[in-house]
Length: 243
Image (cartoon, rainbow, N blue to C red):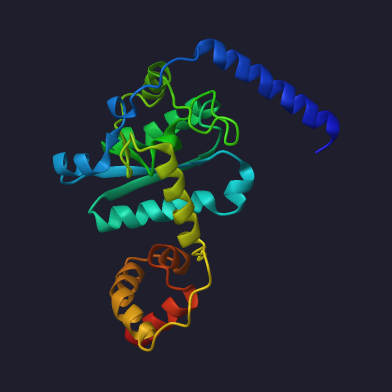
């Protein structure tokens, strides 16, 4: 990107930010759970819950790194394990505080005909404060006005999260970090010792039924790997041997 284009982009971003800060004056944080439901509670109320899985990242490079697909893979796994019927998926790239109304409306349009909810991993996948900044202001939360704007954009469709809507932002960030490590096969931390004898057999006995079930339903090797943590080649070998 040229310096001129970079400056123009910065000016446009600053203009949008000023407009939004005028619309949403700085105020006390709203209570997310007044606008967004915890999926565990919904599952108790609706035994045959249907959902459109929803994922968001802030920057295009995060999508290129697989973060959107990682969110959706984790949500698919959660839905399969908890008897939630997946009727659609919607993902987008945006800050969480602007450009999203159209995307959120599109996600709602997928859910409405199916009588489904929109399901994301955490509140910040649906919305972030206009004042949010990863480095300078990571703790700021949306106001009631911002949450109400979100509800209006989603046309009354129920919004639900895997984590409780009011989960502290540091816990949310920790969850997202661990999710990213797991979906990319990077566990983080120090190198572990050599696996104990019998580890591979135990792992196969634990994951084999899941691999066979997912493959029988037409899941791709990539999705199977993301959902179970088993390498694609290993999963293919298991299906060939034991399927």
